[in-house]
Image 1: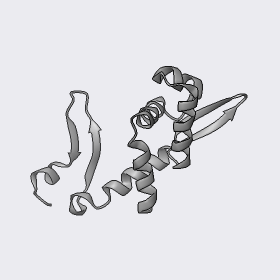
Image 2: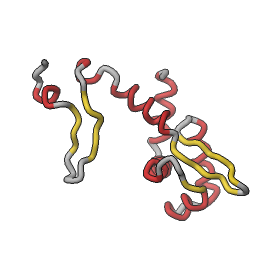
Image 3: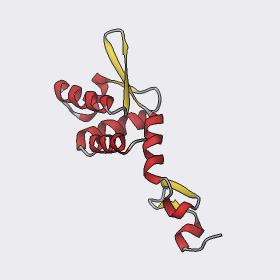
Image 4: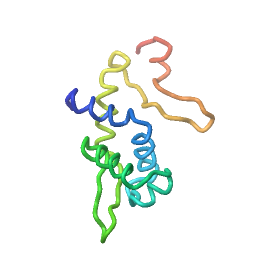
Length: 121
């Protein structure tokens, strides 16, 4: 991934409404959600929602597919993975790390025990 592409995607997610839309689509999974349901769930006016959906699609974070007279949107998980890989490439000085995962008890796990303790195998 090029730096410019990563910057554009991060900038798109830097807006509260677009981040909310993207999170909703990630939570919905590959099946996605139609535009009307997104607007209802987030309380967004259709014109505003359309603007934000177009921006997220333009930078490649979501995909829209026309189904009859509706557009069904889903997160582009490959693009999301590519962005995460770009951000974490060579982290922890090349040691194997785990991605940040919110655990049910509210704690976060980032690196292996060796990574967080400063010890290297």
